[in-house]
Image: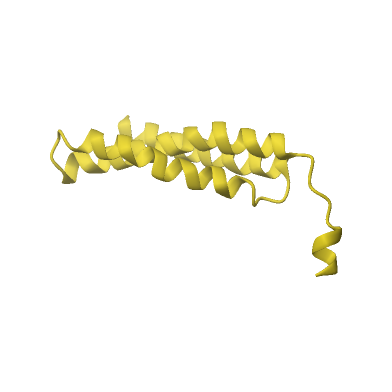
Length: 96
């Protein structure tokens, strides 16, 4: 318990905030695009965009929350950047 009290608050909350709020939003939009593409094949064509649109906040808020649990700010930026590159490269390869 003494160890937890002696820990200093990290000064890199700005980079964690940028990773969570900006890169998290971009990742949530990419994941919502995957849901929309899946929905076009398995749901009514009028319902699929709505499911994709309303899934953004459900994906976005946990991504923002998780960003603050990554130990360093530069690690959060790196992880979210790599996930964005992977998600958008898969998305662009699917869409052609």
